[in-house]
Amino acid sequence: MKLSVVVVNHNRCDLLKLTLNSVIKSLNDIDNEVIIVDNASTDDSVIMLETQYPQFRTITNQANEGMARAANRGIQASRGEYVLIVNPDVILGKETLEKVTAYLNEHKDVSGLGVRMLGPQGTFLQESNRGLTKPWVSFFKLTGLAKHFPKSRLTNRNHKEWVQEFQTSEIDILNGAFMLVRRSVFNEIGGFDERFLQYGYDIDFSYRMRLAGFKNFYYPKTYVINLKSSHAPKFSWTFIKQFYGAMFIFASKYLFKLPEIKVPGIQLYPAQYEVER
Image (cartoon, rainbow, N blue to C red; front, side, top):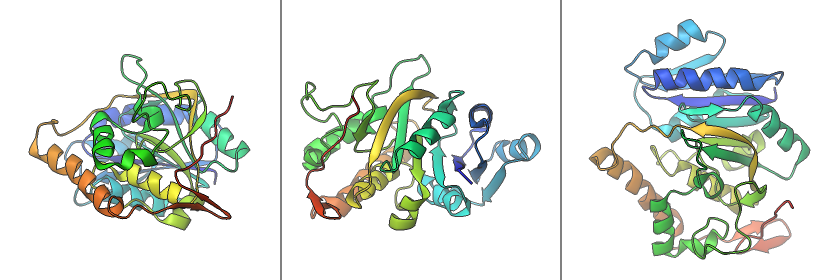
């Protein structure tokens, strides 16, 4: 099987339908499976999946286990050569899956892939090619970790090596809203760190990929629309605990003794990057 699509859902019934319909249109002739892991939704998500999408596999959790653990369940149940993690508020373009799988087929040295993301109004989302929101950018600057992410637009805006919107390039971090990864990567470094409940799991996983010598790329020749819905208001205690708690976990793993990035026969510290011209 070529592609496994894994979607983690929690109370996103209507948006989930939009995502799944776009996935269906984008799959074309790709040998695939679609797995939805439902994190104890209290809306009609599970009933909707059973009645409207019986061709897909649904894993129903009895409690909200968080994004990382639920995604790991879906990955462990999947069989595809490539695994796509996509949020239930992301709408894929008609040719998105065909183009990204073809790119991985043609570029064996690319282990993970992200695409150009647009907001609901069609504006380019900068986290497409840096993977970081503004609070995470501030976190990396304040902790001194920024120097280890040279492609993440953390310092001088005029840096000549930064990735532009329509430039296919190697990047530091894959955005968890849409991240396509070879199964061989999961087999080697394991799944997501389940201590990250809702945020930071993609940043940690991307960094672990770099430590293992894998390459993450930004591919702008297709797009997705990221509606960026969120359950918890940004000033709620739930958001603060999960969002800034993820930063604390990340710092505790890497701040005090940052591992060197090693590739067989080569030591990269910081990493070198490739850009397609």
